[in-house]
Image (tube, rainbow over all chains, first blue to last red; front, side, top):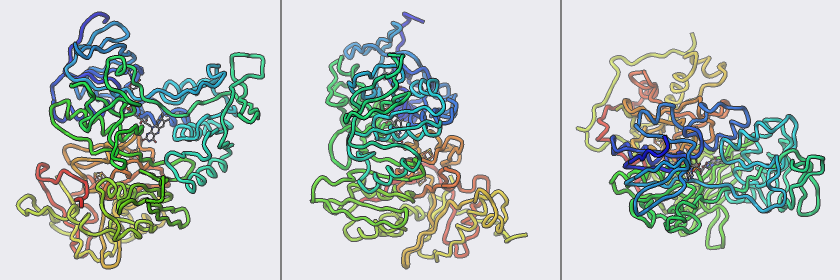
Length: 448
Length: 159
Ligand SMILES: Cc1cc2nc3c(=O)[nH]c(=O)nc-3n(C[C@H](O)[C@H](O)[C@H](O)COP(=O)(O)OP(=O)(O)OC[C@H]3O[C@@H](n4cnc5c(N)ncnc54)[C@H](O)[C@@H]3O)c2cc1C
Ligand code: SF4
Ligand code: SF4
């Protein structure tokens, strides 16, 4: 294998949300252009958020795969797994892999995702300290964990809560440590964050907010293995393992080393193109357009990675396409609490208007600026979340009907007809279609 | 491709489409059992929304450009290219609701009991979907249309 040189039209680095979004778009347009996908993870594409299901219930790899097993074959994609792209030559249009292979490409996508943020806490490299970003991370925890183990989770964000739920299902005793004063503080407001905290506590999780872990230590004989953490206030929490779940930062070393513009992430335009022609980027690695803030920023969520990849794919295949933009949006279902949130949920100043209503388990909040919704949170029934997000995306002025937005039974019928009726009504030109009617209307009878 | 459209002006909000959808998606296909005795309880995939004089029988429009599929975290959603129907693979779905963030109509529902997303499947093999067949007012219309003639954008008309 080593030393043979491969030449492809499209080279995709990263075989996850962004990479798959791109190749699916490319194949919509270009059925034959050669594609190679490379991932340093030794698996076919899998759903990263599902690593928690793997840890919780050992959901097998074929049940967390993101696409069917024959995906690469059907789409005629050469997949190179368990191999890393070490260097890029953006002038010569080549990439070099860890095993020495060279790949020449015409169009390149950097869908390289993120790497875990690891704080410089003393003791962080002890045995028993884990990340929770990849399937291999989940496997390592799975192998290490014993029944009734104590685990300290550092970070009360999305990944921290996700691993906490999985650990509880494995009968671990979990302590979550969050530096800020509330859980999931990037995507929730105080009210809903408190609900989430209560749910976790009810499930037996100890939640320590406004605190950090000062040191990961060991009180036992085995000096290399974690056995406790020392908190910033001196408290000692005994534990068998620590999961660092602070988040990810963009994986940008390839871009940086080859002179591609980077800021916090790889800089791209609305076509998902980097500062170098023929090189595109998307997903957790890139700073993509945000339709709420009107700027380019990191938005490390799955749907945005897929969509950014999709737009990149179209442009790589020669079809001009612009990313409509994403924004932070999440739908959570942890510990029996359903939450949907999007955009700016905690207004930074009083130029925003906040409407909220709470009825039983249904909390509804919208944040409005200049007549347009810029943020929302729902709990309980979250089925209609997409309507709000679509109003946000299309910058619909909601001034006239804003009070219905926080009603419990909000739906399409609550907003002006012209916003939805044309989409749900028969196409305008009657020659375009035929109406199907039953020969004889069927009678379905009640009971027997 | 088959599509169901609504004639909102003649919908009286009676809710029979919901009833027959629930029946169609039950195990027993028996009204009394489907509503009172089946576990897990079958659920309708169509929903009648009412707001004063407006009543609307809402279901998935089986969009051509499918934001729900692009958003799905697990690969549970896919589009059958021959029928144009957007399907949920229940083995994969974790009921996270991320797809619902993307659907502009709010047409994806959740089966909380089973922890799965559910949506209109145009009654798959039935020639006429149950809602259309049983609407007493002919407020629902089933049509056959070439894919190319479909409106590809699911988004709301803006502004
Ligand atoms: C536990 C957990 C739960 C999550 N839950 C949610 C959720 O509920 N909702 C949500 O929207 N998002 C969630 N996310 C975030 C979501 O998974 C990411 O936003 C998404 O995976 C980003 O996709 P991506 O394609 O940009 O990158 P990644 O998924 O990070 O994939 C990048 C791939 O590229 C490979 N790669 C990188 N550099 C190289 C190289 N030089 N050579 C070879 N291969 C390389 C990496 O190994 C990796 O496989 C969660 C994440 C985690 C970890
Ligand atoms: S976006 Fe909504 S209406 Fe369109 S296919 Fe998906 S579920 Fe159906
Ligand atoms: S609820 Fe199911 S179909 Fe919807 S995004 Fe989650 S896994 Fe996919």
